[in-house]
Amino acid sequence: MTDRPAEQPIEHVQSKGRTLAYVVRTWYAPERTTFPTPSDLPLQLGFVVYAAGSEIARHVHTPIERHLRGTSEVLIVKNGRCWIDIYDDDRELVVSRELRTGDIMLMVGGGHGFRMIEDTTLVEVKQGPYTGLDEKERF
Image (cartoon, rainbow, N blue to C red; front, side, top):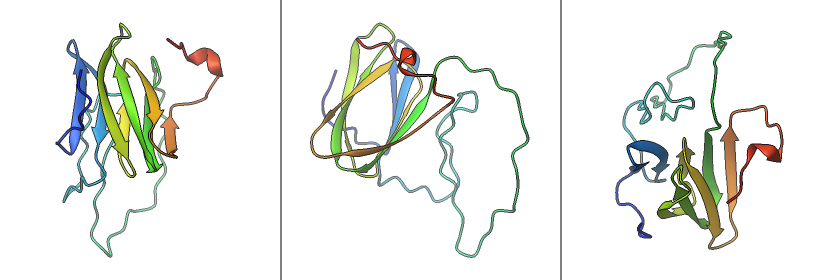
């Protein structure tokens, strides 16, 4: 376990060969469209890059039935600072990382908790529908 922030722009957090999370620093700015997550993850994280004057053609997404197990979530630090503690499937602490305004965390396995350093607003994106607190097991 380490409490120092990662130096790389995208940190791939793993434990025992299993992916737990991706931490993306606010200063990461790819020059072209990049998806740092593998295509088989139930929730994808990408940076879609277009030049000024470009357009994305109007479109709809066709309905595709997907079967999911578990809940992935994305948290974006809108403002403030906090620590995220990332745990493995055995509820053992793997890493603690400081998140700052603009940082992104994609959680795909294990568990997590947060400790606020200052007043913080997190934007959360996850698969729905949300069925209530019985979806969470606190430890």
